[in-house]
Image 1 (tube, one colour):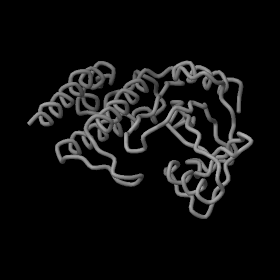
Image 2: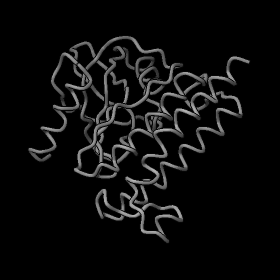
Image 3: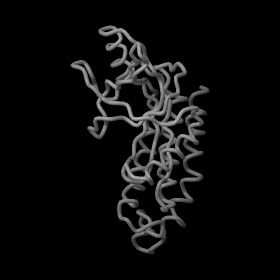
Length: 220
């Protein structure tokens, strides 16, 4: 880990308002360990070996453009040592972890906390779109279990639309041209209109409109 990454992790901790510094927790998978199923993995570990569940935030560097914290659970033994029993998304053997041991309802979708680690303003739009999807999951869906979420079709349609926008924005970010890149739409292709003067402004109106659309549907 570089010094810059350490600084970025500390800044993310400030954003999370946690009371503890981050630590690295070893990862040791069990035969029952499944990706993205930390709560059920820890419950299985407790049933097999005792101990307790310990809540907090796992930290990841994503796409080289953001650092994000995700609600996570690890296993705690009688000596209060922590162990992660869930596969790391990048296959690493250690987890960057902020302790925040307040109870979590696994049936409530808690969105990630994201922070731009580049000088590219377009990344802020990608975060905005991601946060909008997270807001919809939290407010308008019901988690059935670790694998399934129940939602109405209009809600799914809006999520799919915002995720489509997000993919298009990521395509611009990956061009590595900074925030002066041409927009992905016809005006960007034919008129050379910059993204920040085009769809970046469009999203500021479109996303609230879509959220209002879901709100209106949910009141029927």
